[in-house]
Length: 206
Image 1 (tube, rainbow, N blue to C red):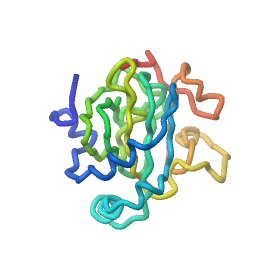
Image 2: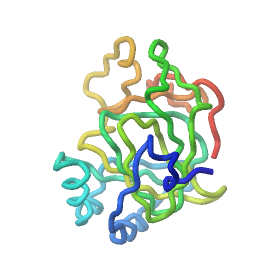
Image 3: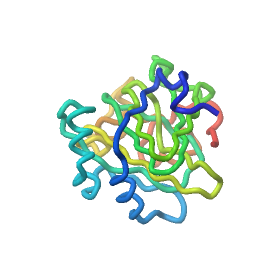
Image 4: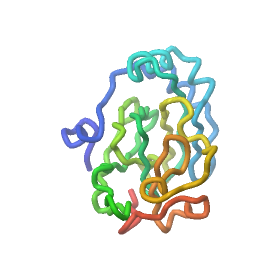
């Protein structure tokens, strides 16, 4: 199993040196569902931390940002998404990220083969920047019954519902939320929410 500290992670992102103690204390207070995951784009308790200002100034160049989280229990790939910007993920627990490259999406069909995915271990207390061309989705738990807690930092407004729901051809079919292009697996159930189904191959399990 690969790690974000391995050379193989370099095409996908980088590890960031940050003081995460206060954030880890706050996210530990978040109530999680017994099954599945929750995602909050913006969490006021996180955005009140000095870490929020540091991320905004040093990582996003003073761009307005949102600091939320994706947490719960998950073992499936289900989909891949990308943004027009980097994403910072902060592991408050051990977790895994299943990652791919936007460049490997078929330029005509917009299908993506799941055999190209690589899984990376992210130890608790680690922050990573995922580059804009990195395909990703919800983190995976590090154990069969383990929960994961992961901070997610993105430009403000990312992942909120679209105002204009009209989708055209080509890449427009992938637009799922603000600044979020998504390709779902047929087994994910996301088609009912309007997701483009284009993952080819096994719905990978970690």
